[in-house]
Amino acid sequence: MAAQFGIRLRKGAAATAVTAAVMAALAGSQAPGAVKDLPGGTSHSAEAGDQVPPSDDHYYTDLPPIRPGDPQSSHDLPGTRKPGADADADPAESQAGIPATVLDAYKKAEAELARTRGECKLPWQLLAAIGHVESGHAQGGKVDANGTTIGTIPGPPLNGKGFALIRDTDNGRYDDDTTYDHAVGPMQFIPSTWAVSGRDGNGDGIEDPNNVYDAALAAGYYLCGDGRDLATSDGMRAAILSYNHSSEYLATVLTWYDFYRDGAHEVPDGTGPLPSRPHTPTAPSSPSTPPSTPPSVRPSPPGHSTSPTPPHGSTPPATKPPTSPGTPSTPPTTPPTTPPTTPKPPAERVTALTKTGPATLATLTGLDFDVRPAVRALDHEGKPVAGLKVTFGVVGDTDARFSGAKSVVVTTNAQGTATAPTLTAGKSAGKFTVRASLASGKPGPVDFAATVTEPAADTLKPVDDKATYEAKAGDAFEKSPDLRASLDGKTVAGVRTTVTVLDKDGKELAEDTGPYALDADDKKTRALTLVSDKDGVLHLPNLHAGDQPGTYVLRFTAGKATADVELTVTDPKAEEPGEGGSASPEPGTGSESPAA
Image 1 (spheres, rainbow, N blue to C red):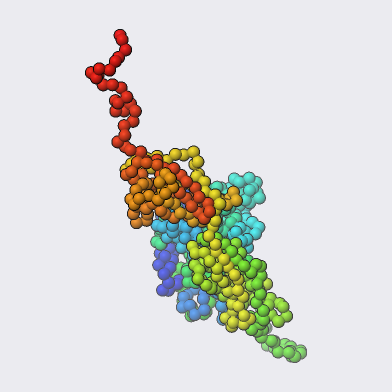
Image 2 (image 1 turned 90 degrees about the horizontal axis):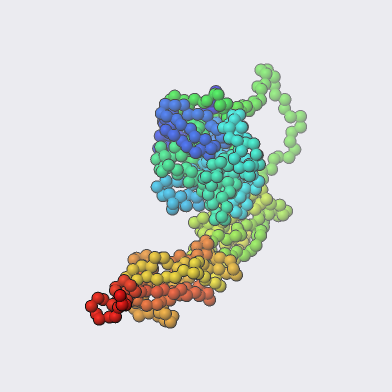
């Protein structure tokens, strides 16, 4: 018997059209013609009318709670509200929390895909939905400062018992199993799939499925495969089914996608909510059958939740047996002598807000700060205060931002600590302040001094120091010189360098003379500014020779570091030896010739 599933209907939400279309398609079992290269390393083929095969993967089936006051209805949603939970409580706020580093990875993957696969229209909320279902956002955000999980997150062995049969492909490198493969990491990639789909999302030169930046970017490219447009219902459906070809998985991911689109917020790493309902796979011989008609809608009043059907394989919660008729309840023998004490809210308990870690922050323009500002809240006994909202704000004339925002709100964890998300410097150098404060203003704010400086270089050296650069007047140089910026022997990214065309003696040229480049407006320029890339390389745009033959100097300057590259412009009218006949006398000129 297949597990029952349903999907939240979100009236008036932008995602409703996608969800409704997907569910209508599911009702008819219209699976894609072919779904290839699944994260499980398998391929499924499902023609129209075929049954959707069961999941091959391990994932969590918890579904988000209904938000208080939300006029949406819930029907047959396992996990909509945990049994015994207070109906008046609001679990939505905690369930909508995504750990800071994990959320940053989702958003950076979205930005990168927007740049390289703009036609895909990948929303970060889809990565968040899959990340929640696959690993609970890396087990609640248990990652280090670089985004690598603290410990591994292996799925079950893919030994053919309830899951696909995939024998070891990585010699146990990622899953510590040399017999069978396991899904690994925050987005649960199979090692064989990672070998061809892995990406480097944090720029450290390593493709690691256990790093949330790498895994999120790889998942984004994977979902955007086959030219999909995720702004359409067909594209969204095909993308999710390519990740795990299961109707239940599709419904679960779409429900979380809708939930995050309705609102999500950042929480400190390691404090994210953990799902608790793992999927129980169906044996391969018993494929699950999707419903032949769409689930019926049974509206519930706002704030009311019907009793959910437990997912397949779970045990309903035990209930207290009713008291037998006629048996009076036994009153307590001793009435309570002390009335219960209502604990004070966190904002009233805190008496001290202190820094944790360094008080100063520093980085180069365009780069992330290595240290994330953090504070700790304590009460009058020196005990940590959890659940306190702390605002981190950027104060001063700077374009540094927390994931694009000038201020963020972070809630203190069980240790009373609130850690700001990664702060990224902009293009402007200078000093500013990061201020951590409470809404009440007391205790007073905590300030961190931040400095952004321009990257410096002590050496500028041509990448190819044996190359020569020559072109005919009126033509373009076949290639332009690239230089590498370094400091103390190490390459430096973000070094701002001026490039000027001079005469052979290093003096300024007369106006409109000598080689030139084209700026962004396609205008000639002989003075431009370059910034070194992540490998420290300064890439010069295509150079044009100009109309005046001669020798010129291309001067690169970055602070005290300079380098000159020689350019040669030849006269195209000058005859090459042997080409114009001038090297040999013409017949009849009276020139001597050897005797016969």
